[in-house]
Image 1 (spheres, rainbow, N blue to C red):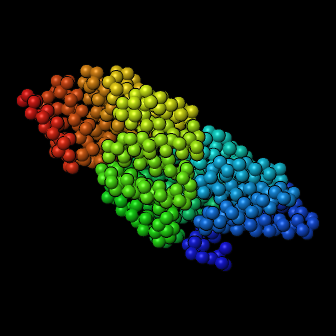
Image 2 (image 1 turned 90 degrees about the vertical axis):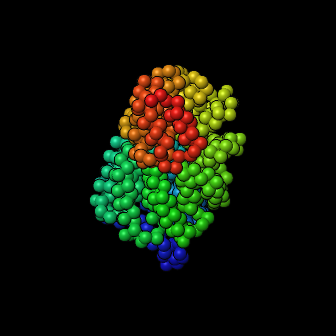
Image 3 (image 1 turned 180 degrees about the horizontal axis):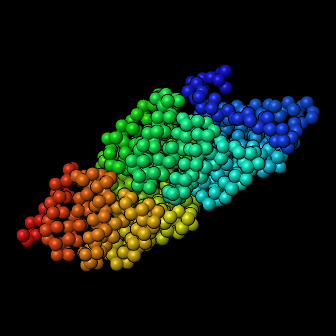
Length: 556
């Protein structure tokens, strides 16, 4: 591949070289003797050799980032391999096709190729190809198709097959890495942490302490730490991943973009919008110079910049960024690609903020259609879209539609056995009941959602904040102000850790806390809460005015 290298191959030369397989099995006589022997006739041997070269070329193209070319080459290999009776060759061709299609996001077709590869390899005693196929199935089924428990069962098959090859630290490391990523998606923070630690130890054993594979694991480990409310650990972990990649590949290599992407997300989650923008802009600068303006990495970055502008309150910029991301993704992939679920969901939220509810509903419906088509009826993204639709329709007065959507959101979340999704859907139903004038009915759902969040994330995770705030407001609306004080105070403390003590994001919480304190008879505390809210940085005059009126009515 390097002998006829263009820009893409040169850019990925280090990755191509590091991806060469180990030659250790070639010295294992027992392993060699178990394998199906090469064909005896010269013509078939020649065809096998040609297919083997196609498989190798497809793998190299994939590593070089030339995904469409890798798919086309692998497809030709599969077609040729199916015309001969040599199972190991067919298995390796199917494996190459599965890996290439998985990289493109065609996870259902990838799964079928990998299933065929695993079965053919096992029948031909090719344990290495079988182990590779099982391990890739763990990734495709778990990460791509969100069937987490099934993917973890496949991990058991992969373990057993890899054991037949002896103690392959590299295979075990990759399997631990994929397990970590699945536990991360399930929000099983402790399990994910253990799996990531195991993967790092095994990759260190196999490749050394500064291996690029370790940087891959550290990216996931940083997300796990973030979900576990360990922001300092998350930021140190992603900084280490960035350091490894920069040392091996240089500061402007496309692989740097993923770490910068994560850095930006963490800063955005912490409310450090300038830091987030700096990380995203550096990643975009690398992307424009390497992958090009109209590439999928750039589309992902535009989607996050949209989220940043949305959080900052600049909805017009947010809308322009998400539409740019969508334009790229539709052209490079397809109008119904799974990545567009996020885009249309985000577009819906932006349009809601612009008070364009009818347009927002159209965006959410598009997201739902794509999710149902590409992700199935158990994926947490579908539940999240149904929650957004339910909230919106409830506010638009379409209460019957809203209740159906919110009830279905809970059903979908439970079907996917995704605890965080179940908690979010339960909280969304509570918000609908609360907004519909039924705070007493909403409270048990808020409490249920809160218990799930606390069990998964711990009591101090920022994600608990909105549910705590809503629970407090529901207590106020049921004339139980004393019960409202504790959840509102907790919500305030959590938002302070994200946005800072003077952020305007604290205003609605302080407003509600003041109401609860006054209702409980503590006028001094209520005054202090409202005065602090009025003095927040960036608070809009229209939001502050009701609090000024409350203070004027408050007796000394």
